[in-house]
Amino acid sequence: FFPNGPIETPFTVFVGLTSFPGFMFCLGYVFPIAYSNKKDAEKRMFMGFIKTLLAFYVSGTFSLLLIQKAGFINIVDMILIRNIPGYSEFIVSFAFVYLVNIFLFKPIKKLVQNKIKFIIVAILCLAFTGFNYGTVINDFFGVFVGTYRFSSFPIIQYGFYFLIGFYVSEHKIF
View 1 (cartoon, rainbow, N blue to C red):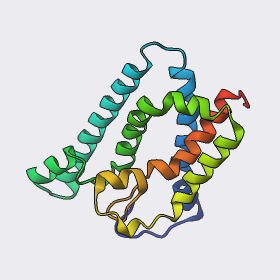
View 2: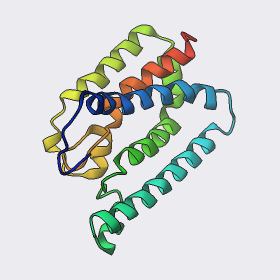
View 3: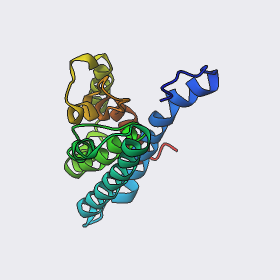
View 4: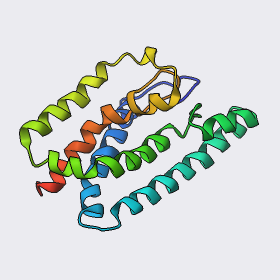
């Protein structure tokens, strides 16, 4: 996150290791509360996707223009998700969590009702942490599986935390 490599303290390492996983857990926890039994759930998720994608575009544009001193073609590549600018990588992942849930929300609700299937899918998400990021040269694909091309927050791997949050919410564990 810091290109000049500041001295990392245990606090910054802790924040880096827990902030996005914690965010994904909380997101998984609130999704069933916000969207279950709502006839316009897909529409609301789509609007969440659009709003978050617009936030990514605004953040990314400012990053490109003010920090990276990039030009118009870089903005077009960002809009087409071919280039993920710095300081906004987590926002694009957040946006695509909405999009994925438009299609997988109901299957996830069923999944968390079957403990064995749930554990298998959660373990598969964790297994993707072994995915070789070096093979990913497409930024759009990198949003889902990770890449070294930008600070990625891959949806599949972080999906583990989302699923745990969903499970906890559905089973009213907290």
